[in-house]
Length: 147
Image (tube, rainbow, N blue to C red; front, top):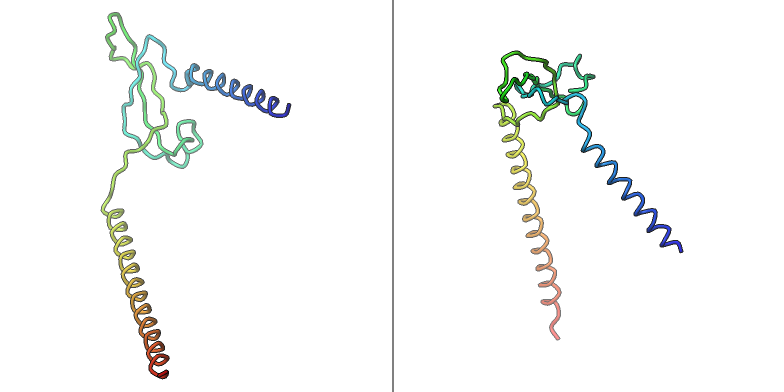
């Protein structure tokens, strides 16, 4: 009885989730929606938003945005040179390494290597010391008894 209720609720929730996802996928986003008479393409690089732009729709996702320009399509699918509108959309910046970030990474790795080598050396030394003490105790115990 309980398992059938749980199973039916699970199926109902799964169906609602699928319907919601389908609705979200089929509805175009309002900001980037284009009509069939225009084509939009990114026109600038992906840049970090300024503090005043952080509250904007294009900067909410990750703090970067890119300018997009839309052009009117004329007969035959040819794009006209007259821009109809432009807006900013969220974008993912390309990862690039500067001299500063590379230097910091190398310093971090070298410091980790120094720590690992020094800890390994002290562990080895301590193990050798404890082994020698155990061997001396064993020698004292076995040399003192002569049965």
